[in-house]
Length: 503
Image 1 (cartoon, rainbow, N blue to C red):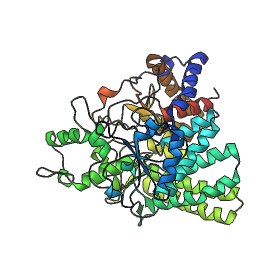
Image 2: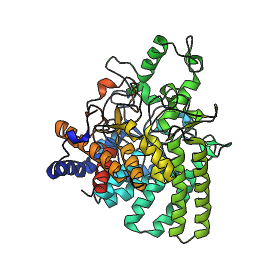
Image 3: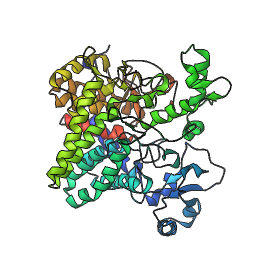
Image 4: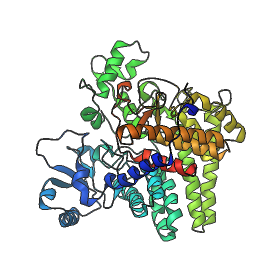
């Protein structure tokens, strides 16, 4: 394996060029009611020729008032290209999909992802704060709070076909990161009801596993994910589902009848698993069974560490607001969760954290970079952290961190690396004082991003960290194979890693 010493770390001038690109990109990637026509444009859904773009307004809003506000900021031609509707109480009654209205500015990831995504927004916010885009960062967080208040939860993204699922919970991380800059206690108090409502979403059924008190990913929708049918196609016009079907029919796979019937096609269990793995943000890999279809049977390391962190964050918020007794309730919850995580998910022999299958009562043995999350959150003991770090070499590649140790043709497996997992790992290593290792991972990824930026003039969503390349499409067999440019969370993580390295 090629080592970092063979890769030239970028110069100050090279890094400055990427910084300038990122600074400019925040405006390119931002959306507001004034840009609602651009935001409504959705490549992931088929639309009739000359049909208006649909915008749905929460039933808690007055649709006519929203229409009037849009008419004041849009040209007549722009407004006439939209159709504003009230979101039905029963979302299964939605006949045509569209954008979910948000009243303020937010930032989209880029490329085909032209909407506000749940967990992307945390890494985007970190970049905005590094770039002193405080007003845009404040609005971004406020839109996530608005989603909870008006659409029930933080959504996978603000489109109607995402109403049945959320994404990894990072809201309190965002709230506290923003508060660090504003010190606005009145605002902090005002968002607490939404925070606790969002927490409840994750710790009640169907997300809650009552026997352990831990949580799982679970999409409440049925049938195929609409965006897959319309958009996740390869050069031959095959969707993700078509390619899985081909895999099923050409391979000998045990237990296939749960997910596929030769007479009627994919079962509802297949679609339940497929949709739920999209809530995880890791779509897709073989981490939770083949194509992640067994995900609803698993208590994931990543989700439960994030919920531990959310409990700690809420405790901190109550401490800031001088409500120490309430803070203790939340910190006690966090302590209990951390104990269960270590009991069920820590594998002493392997020296890694694994997801826990509550049906088989066994830990998965699928090595995945989320094993570093307990270090990031401070759940691991020093001895546990030491064992995890001894396994770092399994994930290390010339361009950074492998997502998993398995090559499967899925984008959330080897040889691919993603910005969020680099940041969580670097911060986890640093927290336990493994600074040389943390700096090494950060430097590898920064070097890769800069090198590929100079080739293509853009920052992208994911990288082959083995070949040190952004040219990944030919290697991805399942899901969507495109490598989207922009790119929100890579931008944010790049700036955060530079700050970590004091650059």
